[in-house]
Image (cartoon, rainbow, N blue to C red; front, side, top):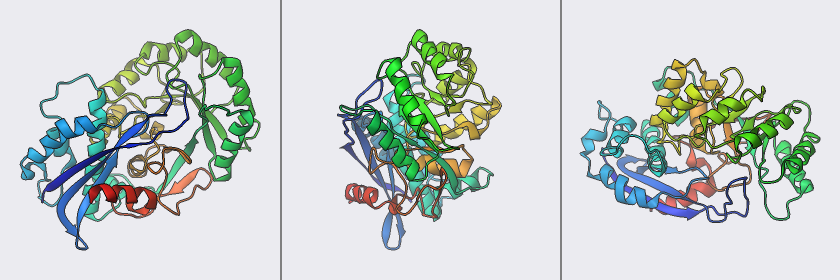
Length: 387
């Protein structure tokens, strides 16, 4: 058993949308295919992966650094002890060989992209959905029913409050019970009008989350916190720079309601520093670490163990990214849910064909691997790369 090829293509996911920090007009991602010599139904098993939106494609790192390490390794060194499957942990160690600790920048995204493809291949070789494989390996019980929320509410030219309301109403009409919009790309007074316009259309039992994408200094974050305290929001997300743990901790003194952050922390060590120094409250706040950006599921498992040691439940984790990898992790390891982009970053976001949202939840189908083969527009792109 061996990995035969590792293929990568950098593809555009450009859009005219913007959040408080960046626009997405030149955004890319890396699509990866790991081809093995394992045959199923007369075809080689291929694992697929890609990186989440918000970070650019990792083609140069993958091609120049990480793919050679993987292909040059002794194939036997990448297998489970039984020899019956690939070992994601051994593969991760091979990818990280000759890397210094710290500086968890773009390399964490490159490794996370490959790691996703590895786990897809591992579950396919085992003939199981990844979420069921994870539950079996980690002593839990798979729950195919996963909470999802609809992320949107971006800024773009000509988008007024009426268009924002239409967008959010479309998510509610599709079964979501929690919707999220951007803040910080307009003055506070204008953002409050946008927030109140969405709250006005929410049915009973539905909630709104807001996301500043790390834009604010402490003074601005506190000003928003003071104003937002008047509303019953699902959460106030990433008000300041993701590595400014002091700002996050001080903000907790001004905002008693739920906050969320973590999507731009790319290692277990950075996540641990957030828990140690960021003032996060395990009874109400949410953690948004995204495995596809932070060295993959192998590292995410370490992060979950760290959280457990600090008394945090995995139910407080709702990953960023809106991809099927995190859906499988949520269903297999008991997370609190997953982000979803109903209309954005396609075909890489969303669910397999025919999977709908009911009262804020989706039900995972029993598809081998991560389940990419069940999403027709996405698997078409993946197969084109693999072939």
